Image (cartoon, rainbow, N blue to C red; front, side, top):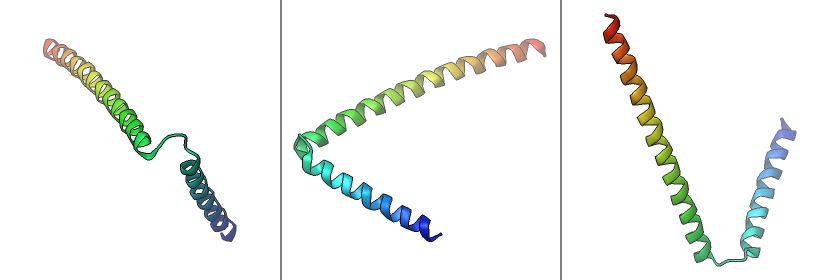
Length: 74
């Protein structure tokens, strides 16, 4: 169990060090980076919303077809 704790500590320390170095050596300013991240987040959010809307439409059509079949067999 002690080895696992040491591993977790090392992983966290490495992640923190990597994050700090990435910020120090980033080729863009913080404002530009935030804008890029916000644009990327908006793009991904829009793609997810569109995919969810498409899947919802498909499932509703499928449900409607199943309900029609059910009405015919009764």
